[in-house]
Every structure is written in structure tokens, then in C-alpha cells.
Amino acid sequence: MLTKEQAGDVFDRIRRFSSAEEVEAIFTSSRFALTRFANNTIHQNVEEENSVVSIRTNFAGRTARSTANQFDDESLRRAITASESLARVQAADPDLLPMPASDEAKAAGEGARATRFFDETAAITPAERAEVVRDMVSVAGKYKLTAAGIYSNADACEGIFNSRGLAKWHEQTLAEVSITMLGDDSSGWQKLNSPDVTKLDAAGLAETAAQKAIESARPREIAPGKYTVILEPSAALDIVGFMFWDYSGVAILDQRSFLNDRIGTQLFGENVNIWDDVAHPLQAGSPFDGEGMERQRVRLVENGVVKRVVYARATAEKMKKSEYAGKVGTIEATGHGFPLPNEAGEMPMNIVFGRPHKPESIEEMIASTERGVLVTRLWYIREVDPYEKIVTGMTRDGTFLVEKGKIQCGVRNFRFNQSLISMLSNVEAMGVPVRACGEESFDMVVPAMKVREFNFTEVTKF
Image 1 (tube, helix red, strand yellow):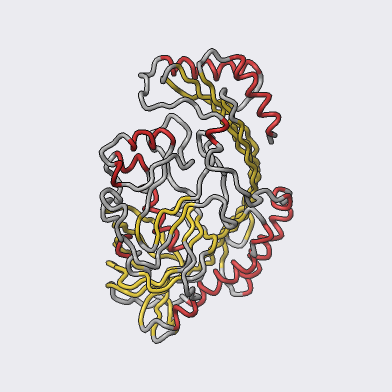
Image 2 (spheres, rainbow, N blue to C red):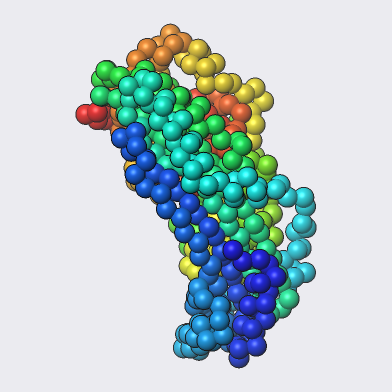
């Protein structure tokens, strides 16, 4: 694993070897270990460690990038030569800005950041992972179920240096548990990760997954249609994640965002508030973007009104000169850009939903539901209509009929076709936002949601 000092020494050599007007180096170094199990037995244990430097050179707006995972002089020289050769044959980019200096990158201020590196997470051994897996498998044995899943831990660092004096560094750990419990005709699932392994209760997650498999056994088939739906946090995360690529200045400029001509309007229900906030205590990730700019806390939605989108540096400058400048709210670099060159621009990736005035537990949502469906997770989600943000997908691993305030039975899974605009306009209740994980989107801080008129279109055969 690299240290900031070692990376700084490598960058000093890169600067000496390069003839470019500007040079930037992004370092990533990680150690990742995973124990995988299926049929109640561990069948794979892997560990890998790697360090990479990505070098960008710039000649009067002509820029390109190359990578190396060896840091001897010869390897670095080859990577620099590749980057410079590619840059020289590029067309000059009129929108490319000079690399940010240290002062510009700090313009948003550097507030206190939550600790993201935990020694206990980094130190997990294969034997300790095996013990945790044994605890989860023992839950499956107790209920005569079959368990499959993973338990992993990682420690990583990333940093960015450039020839204008910028030097940023971030270290983080992450432990993750994912478990599926299988019955004869049912299944249950849970997944969670955290920089701090002490925040993960693997046996508790296994118990929850097992109960879902048990309670959804012998599923009934009910007719498709519009139902009141209670989405657990993982289900809410995976479906709403499909709209956040649109909260981007580049998406607005390209006229491919569902927010075009809608910023400043009441698009969702008044109980919906959304931030992008890398410093939130339940979030994870680097406090700077692909150019080294400090990530700002940005309020994206306030009481259902879309307030603004996020910007990389060049996108903000281009937006200020565009015909859309008066229609998109505040325009400024927010520290959400990807490493250059890229076509995607920027994206908010530390989504935090606001806490409702009167949060309800899932049990309270169930108790107040006359007839509806409880959904554990959604999967195989795809976009159908980009502007109305209609997505399709299926329920999975624990779908239940709720009647007269109680869970009655498991039901066969549904396919849905649902507008995210409509869904977030029909949220009747929300829980306390929690850190959640899914399989279709990135980790967020989201609540469970009770949504009326969720559109199920078909019943599956399982």
C-alpha cells in the first residue's frame, strides 16, 4: 500500500521525466480480500493488492492519459511517453481549463471529515472472515435453508498531485456482507457495508434473510396493478439511483437530462429532500473529485423542488456562457467531476435523503396499510423513458402481501414499470435514512419509503 509520501516521491520523478506544460498523477492503491460461500460451504478465498498511477499530460489544451502499475523509472518513462504521444495528436479542447492550483481546489473550504479508515477493518484475516461465514451458515442450518454470499474487507487510498502544487490524499477501509437464503420455493436477502466493521452484524443480517425466506415460502400469485408499496431501503436505493446521472451540468447541456426545463419546479412531493454530502457520517468515499477539487455539500432537492445540479470546473464555465444559464439555478464548480478527459462530466455520488418530520418504521408503515406489497429488493432495472424517468425491473428475495396492517404471505414476484417522478410524488411515509446497499446502484443514505400507486405490470413464475 502506498503512502502519501511515497506517492509524492513518484510524482516528483514524473514531473522531472515529463516535457508537458502541465502534468497530473492520480494514484490508487488497494488491498482487497473476499471469502465466498455457497451451499452452506466456503468455496473461494481471494486476496489482491495493487497500486496504479494514472498520468495526464497537457499541451495547450491537448490532453491524454496513460497508466502504470510499476513505479520504477523505466515504467514511469514509458507511461509518460504514451500520455504525451497521445496528447500531441489530439485536437485541442477549447473548454479545457488549466489544472487547478491548491488554493482553487480548497475554495469551498475543508470542513471536518468523518474518519473513513479503521484499523480493525483493515486487519481482518481469512480465518476471521471464515468465522463470520460460519456464523451466517449456522443460521441457515438452524432453519434448514441454503446460504450463499460473500464477506469481504478492503483498505484503499487514492490521491491526486499536479504540477501546479495540488496534493490530495484519502484513505478508507470497507467491509461488506451479502447473504442470500434459499428455501424450496422462496428466498431472502440482505446486504450491507461500512468503513467500520463493528457496524456490521453479519449474523443479524443472516437472521433477517432467513426470516424473509421462511415467511415468503409457498408464495401466492396476486394480480398485477397499482399497489401501495413499502420499499425497504435497498429497494428504494436501487430504483432512485437511476436518476442521479441527470443531476449533471453536462447532461443539461447535452439536453439528455430529465431535469431540462424543470429546475426550480415542484417535481416531487414536498416531503422529498435530497443532498449530495460526502461528509455525512454514514457516507463513504473521497472528499475530492477527479481533478482534486474539494467536494461541496449540494442541496439537490428542497421540499420537492429541484434546486440545482452538480458541476465539474469546465462544465460550470461552459454553462455560464450557455443559453441555459438563467434556468438552472446556482452555477459553480462543486467538486463532482470525473478524471479528465471524459465525456460524462460529473455526477453526485454521495446521495443523502433528508430525515422526514415524522419518520415511520417499516412496522408502522405495514400497520397503516390496508392492502399493499412489501418489497425487500429490486433488480434487473432498466430505463424505458429517459425524460419521464420510467424504469422497469422486478422484485426479488422477499416480496409480501400486506392486508389490514399485517403481512399475510409471500407473493410471486412482479415486473414493474414506474416513473420515478411519479413515485417520488407519491411518497406517503418515510423512515429514518440509513446507509444502504443494493446491486443496481451505488451506496446511499436513504429511508424506507411507503409509496402509493406503484405500477406492477406482470407477475413472474417464481
